[in-house]
Image (cartoon, rainbow, N blue to C red; front, side, top):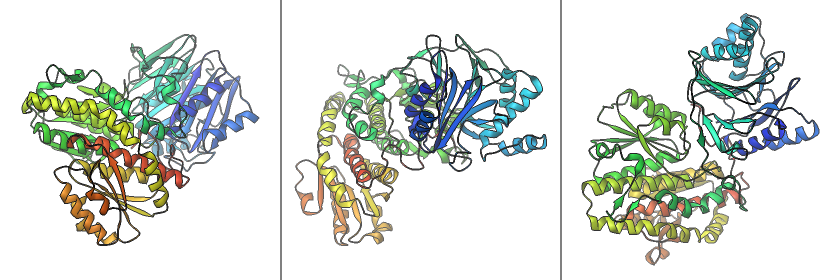
Length: 610
């Protein structure tokens, strides 16, 4: 989850590295550092955010045209100056940065210590750089030392390395953690993702697992780590613009991304509505659509917000198309010896396309013979490359750690898949026309729902100091309750739980008193009256009710202290609208509490380590 950036060219490396680290800080912000080749190696690193490192470099400038930079999300070792990256060998002649976990570091460290090598930090990363030094001492060839050391490593990594022994080269490697090489004019920029590259070039190469690259100013060579064979890589073009990763006048990326949702939902639908046939076109599924239609079981895997999207997908696909669906946490699926057959289809959902647990679950499904599909946002990501087919969500870069627009885009893709399958199985053309009409109206309804932000901000002020929250929903909106609770926990640090509304009586009702705010998603659908009964049960125990319901519903006003009205749509599309007030509520609560909205404590954007 850490941010990696590297540069080799003719420009000043330090300024490029710092700018790249600022772009990548959403991946980790425990500490930051750079190593620059300038005759020898100069390393500067500090605990804290990139701004702390920036201040150090203003007073202690470092110049050079080759270098690496890192912003850390701590795994091995507490966040402090000593454990910050880059790490060096004892003599400070090789510097390395790393995203991932080296699982056999303890055994390697014991052997290296027995051979006389010493260590200063608590990290697994330092073990790797010392191992490379040991091979270099033996072989006198840096490229061989780099490759031989990586062959000894067990675990996941994205790595960049520079060395005073080989001052005109930058070394990178990948196994489980993303790494891209940006190709400029007489220069190369490497990074964990393209957000740190796009300012310099739109031409990128994505390393695959088990690959390394040796980069000079005018060329690069990519090889397999196992056998040293050269790999020809396809150059791809970054699709997003620099403006998409700027705040654009908003106070936080999260708020910007919340308000981008009318457009991102349009983007998820663009070119996919087939009016003539009253159905949906999904080009990424064209070659597998018949098998998908005839599937006896779908299994959706994801983590966090993507798991919640999968739960909505279960309701969508079962309800519209009549295909059995199971939804599993990817982190549990990979370890529980799941029963999978070649007739199953496994759908992996991930914003980044690099989520470690989801990728591992996908590979386990493939190993057992299942067809695999992906719903991802990032073009060229590992899940996108390794699945048999899939659909991009087209949400654009999401910088805020708490996912917002990626979630609604995932819901949009799942809804389109469900409609496509339903039209192939049991939905009539007239029903299809009505669904397409509702889909076309959705972006405007999302925009209207977001226009109620001032009311939600006032509600947040009233409850900002509440220690606990309960979120309740039923049917399609039960997963929305889970997602609302997760958002509040992530960025405001308020304890919150999401439940199916009827389950409240099976335990959580014991928590309800005059100090407990309870958020109900009370859409006027087939279970509305049941939700109203649940609201009455909370009122009878003096709970404080915040209700989200449809415009024109006057009944709810007498039952809740606060009512947030949203436009009505088809029940299966309602989660896309109903989650918006919950996103805004969590945002404004965090602001009221003085929390760092875009960089919540202990979290990072893309979970690429187990």
